[in-house]
Image (cartoon, rainbow, N blue to C red):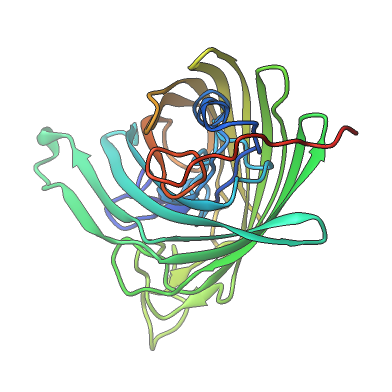
Length: 341
């Protein structure tokens, strides 16, 4: 039977991780409104790295609390998401920590009525197995850089508080014990509603590996040997993630319910057991002006083939850079008029 995978599902023989990444936010009348939207509605979604939940290269749950479907005002953004948690894979615990720095550029260009946005990220990951001292076995610890990622995105303001975005990009092959052993294509489809102080978002993330089986196990070793030439191969399943947010803002505060699920879509080799899971929790955010902070806590309510449930804490920092009206950007225009629909 295949042991649990992923930074929060690694075992003595298997380690796995993932990330996520994307960026967006709704256009507003002034910078105060923009910052409130970012903090209170989670408008900025820059996703990149994290523990592999259900074989996902994009970390399940890394875009919750963010209005992934809404376009960002033109300019540059910096964001860092940090999370740490453990999975109770008895008689041992699997713990992972990640830092996910992302840079996003909301360009001045539009195509087919959509804002064109670019994102790049290169996260770092640590993962370890904490064993019961009574077993007399040492723990296992890995640390390194994850697969670097680059994305392009089109985000439409549909009016009446609705936004939709499509993201296309890739995580690139990287030699590291905490990275995947191939390049994978990443697509995302997000729908957001941000009117009347509400923040409702569903973000569907679809990952496709360019190589299902490789000659390097790295963080995703196959459960059985595939060839005599390479007795330990890497197995890379395609995946679907769904990140969900239902929140409301109260002035500069944001409170939200968040949930996420992930599912392996295929079996790279015979004997590979597909993983799936669903987690939920609560989020609290605050707009400090030049900086926006969010924090949330999640816990698995269902898991299959992970060997235990994961409990995880998250923190996010959002820093708008040269956006019009931002603390480090040019002055906002005196008046912005949006047509009625």
